Image (cartoon, rainbow, N blue to C red; front, side, top):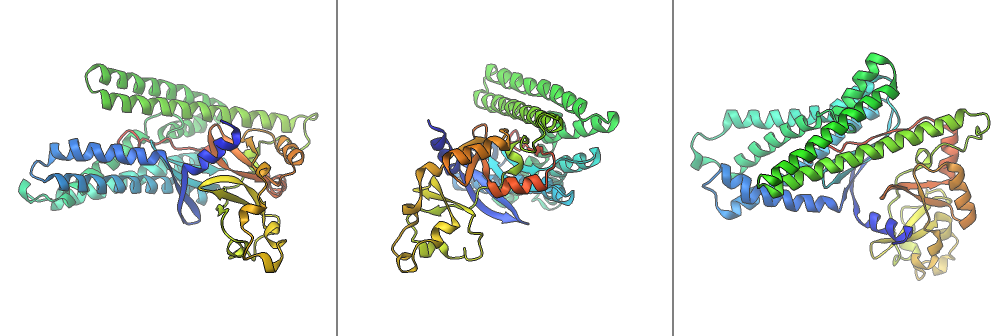
Length: 408
């Protein structure tokens, strides 16, 4: 598959829902798989085991509602991280709900161990508060007799316990999970050495994830194939996330070394990720220029606008392209006619911005789609690079491969 098609597939798999406090929230297509699996598990196994007097439709209603509430809780967990990060002066690019929980895309680096601890610990605290509040209600007001227990009671009970499990699992010392970041902040605080803190957190995390994978294998051999596969997949996913985080740390360290070198100090050796921004809202190719320009009057003429065709990214235009269409033709010309397919170009998030500028010049484009492994994380433009040059600061990403997964 070409890089351009990979970009389209990744964008099609991510849907923006809304924004909270200026933080974009979106879901990945894999989230739908999790919804189906969790709903099925709750409706066919968990609820029938605890509440035996309900009807089949009641089990499924409770399963669906609990699943949706669980992911609402995951969102609240990630907002805990993000809002504390904002209070520390960091930038939050967004929150994404995935198959194995959620991820807060936080740009910027905690300046002190205490700040990193607060950001990491905020998510589990939110989950713990939600869980304790729901279970407190259950223990105080739940019916005495089983026949009086309704699906509402069951949903409150299960959602409460699942949030407690989410908080507990998140605090396992497996970097880049929350517990791993708490461990890293503690080692950083004791030693004053961020590199040593990262090495310790990675080493402990590898042990934790291998134990998870081993536990999953043991459950498979014990006959619990579904549960074992799920646990093993979680361990593998977290292990992959840790390796990606380690690669990002290594790339950041290389860029900092290059920037401090007299030979390389041309201010263009920092990674593209530092100058990237969130993917703007896409405009459908079949919209007329008049329709597309609605609400764009105040937009910078050089702003890049992604254009989609049947849900897939087909290329980019700039705001000026729309303005250049004669007024009399704007109601008949569609946006797709203005797109050059060659405008869809990609670059790795850890590539130096020097390379990004070279690619833009080579292909005569104003922007590049920024990829982190197989994920689209945004775009980089010439304006973004200039702004980053003026506001340069080291970047790392707080990425919660949360335990929300395991409790599911």
